[in-house]
Image 1: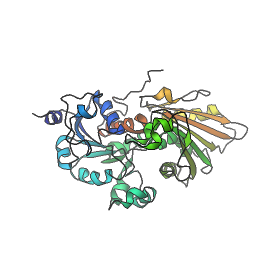
Image 2 (image 1 turned 90 degrees about the vertical axis):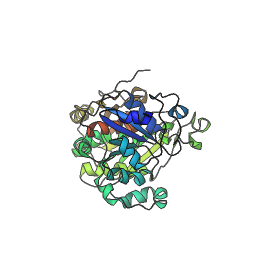
Image 3 (image 1 turned 30 degrees about the vertical axis):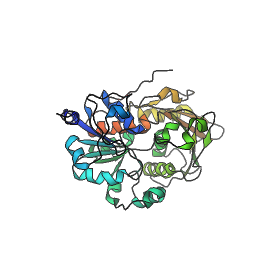
Image 4 (image 1 turned 135 degrees about the vertical axis):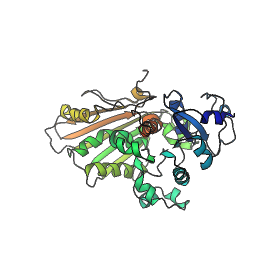
Length: 363
């Protein structure tokens, strides 16, 4: 029996990881290694196809040293029940329909199905759209936005889950409770977010080189960043009305971690930081992957490294009625692969935190 066949005989939730050697794929495989119910049974990737896993990622041991295969839908369907697509934007939408037709359930870590409208996706991802002949309007409408704390029941029943981006995850977690309850104005929201270089993926890019990124911090995508409309879409869904916000990302000289600071105007300027912390506590009390910090304690990215936990905090400037929301996550775990595994857990009928690291080994 081949290594791949041996992997495929494992009982329980069988998971194929496509794009296995990228950061999202690697983190997904690492998280599933010790999972009690989900097992990686297929590794796919075009650039790595035909190679032994040890020759690609010798630092992450896998039993029997499997061969990475090309992403053939029939072969994937024979080996897996679930598929995690960790592919560049514009590629998942080519493979996902074939997988769904074969009865597989799919979690996509790219942006291909995050928008309800294919037309909107095409406007935001102009370069990818120009290279594709794509007709997935129905899939876009039926895909579930994979924010487990907000869409848990829908994710449990979903065939296709579109995992959110890391910036939207960190920004929406503290913001949504206040939009849901109508406690803040829906205009004038400002998001200032900072991320490490791993957010750019594993393919070499000049801006991510150590000589370029070290000892420097710089904004990018200041107007019209791709994640702006993704954040607005979810914010509008929860608020029940139009939301327009300013989002500015920054690249900071660290490998992993993301800190988002959100500024919004309270409709009741009499609300205090303690009141707003109570709002967050009420929403996230039963969600173990989110921790609400006490008033005066502000999240640090170091506290979330290698964990699937989001740390959120709030402060209020009582002079102006301005609320400041803060959120820290590991961009590769809660902001990508860990959140994908949360979705797999729900799809497999498990508690969302199953098998996920929630505690940081500080420092």
